Length: 142
Image 1 (cartoon, rainbow, N blue to C red):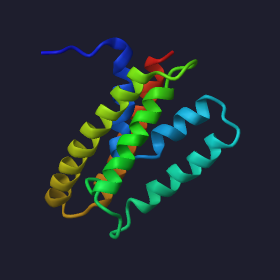
Image 2 (cartoon, rainbow, N blue to C red; image 1 turned 180 degrees about the vertical axis):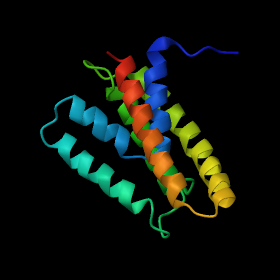
Image 3 (cartoon, one colour; image 1 turned 30 degrees about the horizontal axis):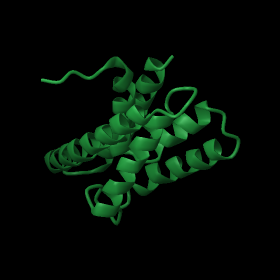
Image 4 (cartoon, rainbow, N blue to C red; image 1 turned 90 degrees about the vertical axis):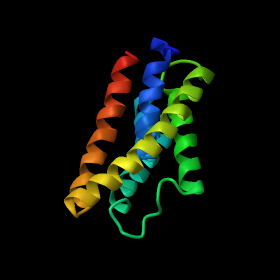
C-alpha cells in the first residue's frame, strides 16, 4: 500500500476540507499569505458559502460543476499552502483530498441527515470539521 509522504499530508488534508466547503481552504491560505485583496474577498465568499450551504436549493456537491469546483479549490489551496513557491505536488495532493472529501462528505452528510431527520446540525458539524481540517493543515506547514 502506498504511503503518503509528510510533505503531501497537509495539502491532502486541506483538500479534504475543500471537498466539504470549497471556499474555506483558499480563503484561509490567502489570508495567511497576506493577500490584501484576495484574502478578504475569499473570506467573504467562504462566509457566503457557509450560509448558502444550509439552503435547500443548494446543489449537490457531487454534481459535475460543484465537484469540479471543489477539486480546483483543493488543488489551489494545496499548491499555495506552503510559504514560498507554488507546489505542484501539493496541488495534486490537494485535488486528491478534495475528491475524497467530496465523496465521503456527501455520503456521510446524507446518511446522518436521514438518521437525525434534519440537515442543520449535520451541516453545522460539517462546517466545524472543514474549519478544523484547514487549521490542522495550516499547523502542519509551520
